[in-house]
Length: 260
Image (cartoon, rainbow, N blue to C red):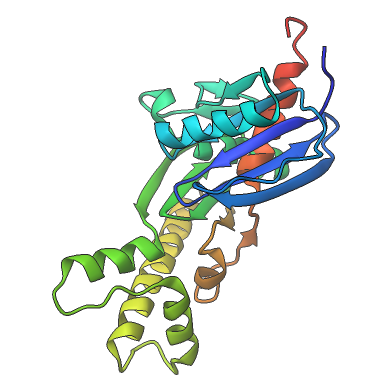
């Protein structure tokens, strides 16, 4: 049996992140690439298998399969999906498998990284997702909203007099502003969408702590986490690799089974 490292692939709607991790948890290599690009996997050791979380659709899934087959023909590929229960995390979704694999892997990674803590996991990507995870590993539910960039794009696409603002332009407009209320349309659009993100997260964090009558650690990750963190009025922890860490734990658990 090949005891090489695990190839972990986290395919989101914007980018694909990957890592090569040993069974002992040593992170050997990693990177990220756009859906249409080709990663440089030349010279990497033969993995024991690939574990893939893909929320970007069938076309991206097929592309990942092609990339892996081109580099490591016949390598076993495991497509991770949410389960009713796995590695100490319990899924209370009405249909367990309908929960996004990225959210599921992220909760497994977070539960292991912060044992014994109540968690609110906020991932700020194409969509903004929130997961409420109790200290005992029970996922009690979540929220999904348009992400910061998607909010700005939607306003630009569906209103006649508002521009479509790109993230870099939005960041510069926000950095140049002197207060919460803007005096030009690009800044008003950028800041309004940004504060909507922060307001959602703050409200969820406050309400969750009140509901549970306990402290809740707020974890931020994703491509827009830096800019949202700049206006967020709640204590938080940054962690940008929870999905890959969850995949690593799933891979390690799977290969530890005597039947594999």
